[in-house]
Image 1 (cartoon, rainbow, N blue to C red):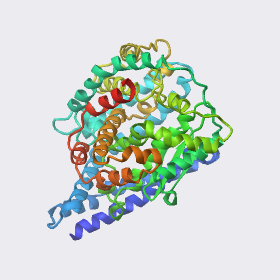
Image 2 (image 1 turned 180 degrees about the vertical axis):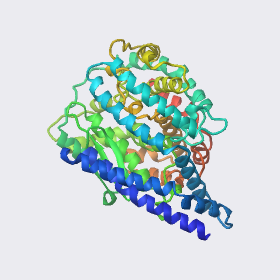
Image 3 (image 1 turned 90 degrees about the vertical axis):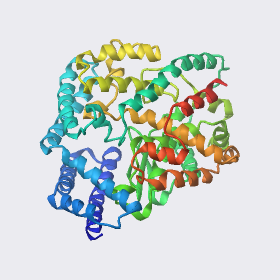
Image 4 (image 1 turned 135 degrees about the horizontal axis):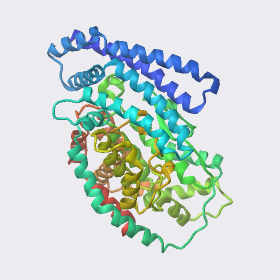
Length: 492
């Protein structure tokens, strides 16, 4: 196993470099002085160049070829070698010139988006998008394996092994169920007795969030929480960085952003420590990662039991406010179709993703001219959510940044994550009859231990997310658990 051990050392080196790239990315979003951006960009580019040189080195490829011939590689080492090969193959399929060309086009497109979105000017943005799309298609054509479509080649970078056919089945189930469910839920909630909106100062929200994070089991010895324009979880498993933002008129945004990112953070902190730095010790896919955050944020934190757990925490930090459980429930469980994906509730959110999935697939497979995007977006928004975006491209087809830096194939992972979360939480509850009482008391150790055993510690041992889900929950991913969850929570 001499060559395999040498290859492990190569990936350890890459991991050390990526460690500082991750922390640099966090710093860019949180606290870097504006005047330092140019120097940081140059330093980042140099580190990225070093990683590229290592990954594309003939010596690294030779080590892989030699390691694959060695015997006695089994279990986790065998899975790690598989992930090493997957990573190297993906990195070396695409010409460096295309990666450089895409990086430049993405920077130009993102800058144009920031300018033209504020002006609601899609026509001026479209040429930049079109250029980036053509380069992304070139990238996809080089990534593409036999039997894959161009779109699947891009999807594979986020969800290894997943096919369009599988997504179509899952999302078609949602399309049959959700539009009618949304209408029924909004009609039911229209009969709610009005309650006084809860105003929570930002400093109090921070204290509440820290209390909740501690109960959920986030390890502050190996992580921290800060503020940024958009909530995210970054850093590395040994140093997890979480951010959120606060609005005193909408405590749900800040608190549930924290709960969401804590799910991501606990997953990272729960990856197998003895293998950190190796590809097999990474999260299996973005959909599995999103499944952990949405399990915390949606499956757990919106339960009646969790809201009862939250109530005394709010009362402790707001002793002079007459806070009721109904105030929390109305804010946390409100369902209302809107134009904006980021602020959408858990019931309407999947339709935002279905829309984007169908459109980006059409773009990559040459079934849609980019100049037709606003019209198709409006058509699907009306069909799926009963809302028109005609003339409002800023909050329609221009609202997201993903396509502006060429991230096609990313959007489905959000709703795959919601489905994963529902299915995982359902499986967990079947193993623990005390989960409700534990949640009400703020004891989440049993949940965390179960997730650690079934999901977190497994990292990328299994070759696909579907295989991991089948082992962890007893069945491949399907829409049944998510649909049942929505019916049970909102329509009973």
